[in-house]
Figure 1 (tube, one colour):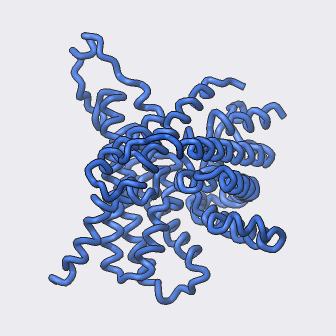
Figure 2 (figure 1 turned 90 degrees about the horizontal axis):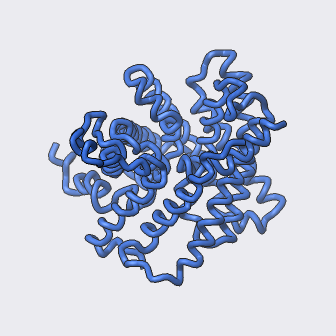
Figure 3 (figure 1 turned 90 degrees about the vertical axis):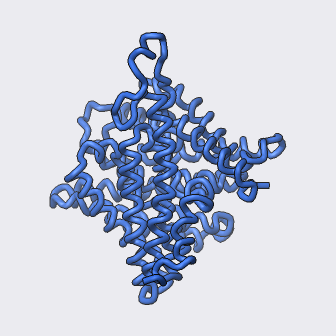
Length: 210
Length: 202
């Protein structure tokens, strides 16, 4: 049992959440990270979906890694991921219909999310199922973390709410405070991610580019 | 005819793949370091879009909808895209080795470019819209014009960013923002500029 949570495995799990974040450091999976973050709720659902899909596709590919011929591995990976995404998409439609409407095509686009293909190629093809599972959960949570941070600021400043509860009191609006409509527009997502990168890299000199 | 043209122009400017939907961001950020490769990748993406979208349109309307197995669309679409990218790769390698060499690794990566899959999924949504809607895709010509417009819009934005980044090499950017950070801000400003088109009514 102790071997399951050895130091190396804990490292595999925790490094993508902080130092080696898939979005801000490895630059993977940007598309959906930006598009679903106008509100907090879809961002959380999207983060969880990606975490689940990354973890399970990592496990499946890791189990198959010795039987799949090298030449057709990409298409096998795509089919495994597409099958998992279909399952998640149907579950969302059944139990969280409103959110699945808000996410619209971006659930289907998890298939082409670079985090998945990146982790499958870089990790699951050369490691055992348990390590791959941890790696998938870690990367998924690292991705979800960025999504939640971006969505938090966009929803708070753009609509004055969090998870649809009003945070900024009515008296502020009476005194002339206004929601910043620009925050809900796509360009601000890019700029907030840039600020997160800026913050992270000014604290971690190793990550800076020359 | 009007509808096809308006669909074409809208998909370049108003519904731009990058600036309105952030599709194909990964390769967009990675390959926009110089204008020449950016043009090559832009052409390749446009080409794959124009080939895959009509095929997926026919699959959706002639196979999936009549049989009521719409939930299989993700798997079918991605299989079509992967197969066509493989085909394009072989054709390019056979007939134009120089283009093949310059595109290199990017050609197979187009299979996992979200812009391609995204266009197919948007098309799937637009089929269900009424014929009077300016975004509706009602026949295969609409699908082709939408694909061409999206591809050109994508190419326009990647070439634009590549040109800006070439010039930016000479500017003094704060160390933590260097590379990725400043690129994000640039794309954000470009996206704001493109927002002017959103009121466009054709």
